[in-house]
Amino acid sequence: MPVLLGELNQDLTTALKAKDEVAVSALRFLIAGLHNAKIAKRDELTDEEILLEIGKAAKRHNESIEAFEAGNRQDLVQKEMAELSILQKYLPQPLTDEELEKMVDEAIAAVGASGPADLGRVMSTVLSSARTRADGGKVAEIVKRKLGS
Image 1 (cartoon, rainbow, N blue to C red):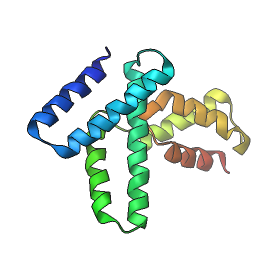
Image 2: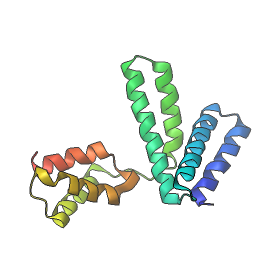
Image 3: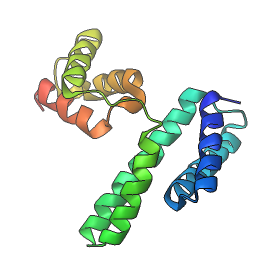
Protein backbone atom coordinates (compact mmCIF):
# COMPACT_ATOMS: atom_id res chain seq x y z
CA MET A 1 0.00 0.00 0.00
CA PRO A 2 1.37 3.42 -0.92
CA VAL A 3 2.40 5.60 2.00
CA LEU A 4 0.08 8.45 0.99
CA LEU A 5 -2.97 6.18 0.85
CA GLY A 6 -2.20 4.93 4.35
CA GLU A 7 -1.94 8.53 5.54
CA LEU A 8 -5.29 9.37 3.93
CA ASN A 9 -6.98 6.40 5.60
CA GLN A 10 -5.43 7.30 8.97
CA ASP A 11 -6.61 10.89 8.63
CA LEU A 12 -10.10 9.66 7.73
CA THR A 13 -10.18 7.57 10.91
CA THR A 14 -9.03 10.57 12.94
CA ALA A 15 -11.68 12.80 11.32
CA LEU A 16 -14.38 10.20 12.02
CA LYS A 17 -13.39 10.04 15.69
CA ALA A 18 -13.32 13.84 15.91
CA LYS A 19 -16.70 14.04 14.13
CA ASP A 20 -15.21 16.49 11.60
CA GLU A 21 -17.90 16.26 8.91
CA VAL A 22 -16.06 18.40 6.36
CA ALA A 23 -12.86 16.34 6.57
CA VAL A 24 -14.80 13.06 6.53
CA SER A 25 -16.72 14.13 3.43
CA ALA A 26 -13.62 15.35 1.58
CA LEU A 27 -11.50 12.31 2.47
CA ARG A 28 -14.22 9.77 1.70
CA PHE A 29 -14.83 11.35 -1.70
CA LEU A 30 -11.10 11.41 -2.41
CA ILE A 31 -10.53 7.81 -1.32
CA ALA A 32 -13.48 6.68 -3.46
CA GLY A 33 -11.94 8.51 -6.43
CA LEU A 34 -8.60 6.82 -5.76
CA HIS A 35 -10.34 3.45 -5.62
CA ASN A 36 -11.98 4.16 -8.99
CA ALA A 37 -8.63 5.19 -10.47
CA LYS A 38 -7.11 1.96 -9.13
CA ILE A 39 -9.87 -0.05 -10.80
CA ALA A 40 -9.40 1.82 -14.08
CA LYS A 41 -5.65 1.20 -13.96
CA ARG A 42 -6.16 -2.43 -12.88
CA ASP A 43 -3.21 -2.11 -10.54
CA GLU A 44 -2.21 -0.34 -7.32
CA LEU A 45 -1.62 3.40 -7.59
CA THR A 46 1.79 4.82 -6.80
CA ASP A 47 2.19 7.81 -4.51
CA GLU A 48 2.81 9.99 -7.58
CA GLU A 49 -0.43 8.81 -9.20
CA ILE A 50 -2.26 9.46 -5.94
CA LEU A 51 -0.87 13.01 -5.92
CA LEU A 52 -2.13 13.49 -9.48
CA GLU A 53 -5.60 12.32 -8.43
CA ILE A 54 -5.57 14.66 -5.44
CA GLY A 55 -4.56 17.47 -7.81
CA LYS A 56 -7.51 16.63 -10.08
CA ALA A 57 -9.87 16.66 -7.10
CA ALA A 58 -8.50 20.04 -5.99
CA LYS A 59 -9.01 21.39 -9.50
CA ARG A 60 -12.64 20.18 -9.45
CA HIS A 61 -13.16 21.98 -6.14
CA ASN A 62 -11.69 25.18 -7.59
CA GLU A 63 -14.00 24.93 -10.60
CA SER A 64 -16.97 24.34 -8.30
CA ILE A 65 -16.02 27.38 -6.23
CA GLU A 66 -15.99 29.55 -9.36
CA ALA A 67 -19.35 28.18 -10.49
CA PHE A 68 -20.98 28.65 -7.09
CA GLU A 69 -19.62 32.18 -6.83
CA ALA A 70 -21.11 32.96 -10.24
CA GLY A 71 -24.41 31.52 -9.03
CA ASN A 72 -24.20 33.53 -5.78
CA ARG A 73 -24.28 30.40 -3.59
CA GLN A 74 -22.00 31.41 -0.72
CA ASP A 75 -23.05 28.43 1.39
CA LEU A 76 -21.72 26.03 -1.23
CA VAL A 77 -18.63 28.19 -1.83
CA GLN A 78 -17.75 27.89 1.86
CA LYS A 79 -18.25 24.10 1.81
CA GLU A 80 -16.06 23.67 -1.28
CA MET A 81 -13.35 25.93 0.16
CA ALA A 82 -13.31 23.94 3.39
CA GLU A 83 -12.98 20.65 1.50
CA LEU A 84 -10.30 22.14 -0.75
CA SER A 85 -8.27 23.17 2.28
CA ILE A 86 -8.35 19.54 3.48
CA LEU A 87 -7.01 18.31 0.12
CA GLN A 88 -4.33 20.98 -0.14
CA LYS A 89 -2.49 19.65 2.88
CA TYR A 90 -1.61 16.53 0.85
CA LEU A 91 -0.39 18.41 -2.22
CA PRO A 92 3.18 19.65 -2.57
CA GLN A 93 3.80 23.39 -2.28
CA PRO A 94 2.90 25.11 -5.59
CA LEU A 95 5.68 26.66 -7.63
CA THR A 96 6.18 30.39 -7.33
CA ASP A 97 5.82 32.62 -10.38
CA GLU A 98 9.60 33.03 -10.51
CA GLU A 99 10.14 29.26 -10.46
CA LEU A 100 7.55 28.83 -13.22
CA GLU A 101 9.20 31.53 -15.32
CA LYS A 102 12.55 29.79 -14.94
CA MET A 103 11.06 26.39 -15.86
CA VAL A 104 9.41 27.89 -18.95
CA ASP A 105 12.69 29.53 -20.02
CA GLU A 106 14.50 26.21 -19.60
CA ALA A 107 11.81 24.34 -21.54
CA ILE A 108 11.91 26.87 -24.38
CA ALA A 109 15.68 26.41 -24.62
CA ALA A 110 15.42 22.61 -24.34
CA VAL A 111 12.92 22.19 -27.18
CA GLY A 112 14.34 25.02 -29.26
CA ALA A 113 11.01 26.86 -29.36
CA SER A 114 10.91 29.93 -31.54
CA GLY A 115 7.26 30.93 -31.77
CA PRO A 116 3.62 30.23 -30.96
CA ALA A 117 3.66 27.00 -32.99
CA ASP A 118 5.88 25.43 -30.31
CA LEU A 119 3.43 26.16 -27.47
CA GLY A 120 2.35 22.54 -27.08
CA ARG A 121 5.88 21.17 -26.87
CA VAL A 122 6.92 23.75 -24.27
CA MET A 123 3.73 23.21 -22.23
CA SER A 124 4.26 19.45 -22.29
CA THR A 125 7.85 19.79 -21.09
CA VAL A 126 6.97 22.17 -18.26
CA LEU A 127 3.90 20.27 -17.06
CA SER A 128 5.66 16.90 -17.12
CA SER A 129 8.30 18.21 -14.73
CA ALA A 130 5.99 20.42 -12.61
CA ARG A 131 3.24 17.79 -12.18
CA THR A 132 0.83 18.87 -9.47
CA ARG A 133 2.90 21.87 -8.44
CA ALA A 134 1.76 24.11 -11.31
CA ASP A 135 -1.58 25.17 -12.73
CA GLY A 136 -1.83 24.50 -16.46
CA GLY A 137 -3.60 27.79 -17.12
CA LYS A 138 -0.88 29.78 -15.41
CA VAL A 139 1.83 27.88 -17.31
CA ALA A 140 0.01 28.49 -20.61
CA GLU A 141 -0.21 32.20 -19.85
CA ILE A 142 3.54 32.42 -19.19
CA VAL A 143 4.45 30.32 -22.26
CA LYS A 144 2.19 32.41 -24.54
CA ARG A 145 3.73 35.61 -23.23
CA LYS A 146 7.27 34.31 -23.72
CA LEU A 147 6.60 32.90 -27.20
CA GLY A 148 4.82 36.06 -28.29
CA SER A 149 1.41 34.65 -29.15
